[in-house]
Image 1: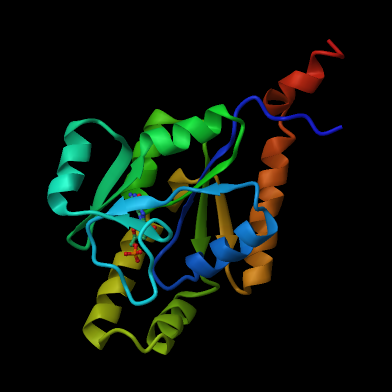
Image 2: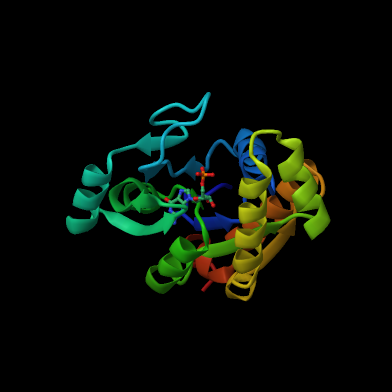
Length: 203
Ligand code: 5GP
């Protein structure tokens, strides 16, 4: 018997630029369409192929600062001169309806979520090695050497935050990383505290 959850699970995923997070997330959501992916707000310009409302909600700096002032964001951070943030209402409504919500956010934002929602699952994705991360960034063929070096040095700073996460997923192959994340989600769903509804029959 599948019981509807009382409350959805908040899942926070972080990882350095170039680790393949978007591919892993797309694959995970393909297998778990019941998970709601939180579309962030950002002041950065859309990249080729990105759609407003799908990849991000693209807003002006003025609009973002209004959202901060009106306390509409669960968390926000400034990353490479642009704001990124998570709408509180969009995720709260889903969690209350028993729907799991996935956030793809960087480390400062994740720390803010941890302070406000300590029961969220914090997952960090790493590449199999630092050399592999460098290789992947070079293979993208989209950035200058200077930008790539900037991303690599940012990655080193981000890796220092790994001890604040609950789980470390290695993206050697996308299918393996997705499997690891699904295992984490299954284990979390089996926690006694998350099965309180069914438990009432036995206690
Ligand atoms: P990109 O510009 O490459 O799409 O994203 C840059 C970084 O911002 C990534 O590490 C991504 O996880 C992070 N990010 C995306 N949305 C949010 C958000 O709502 N809040 C925070 N704190 N970081 C975000």
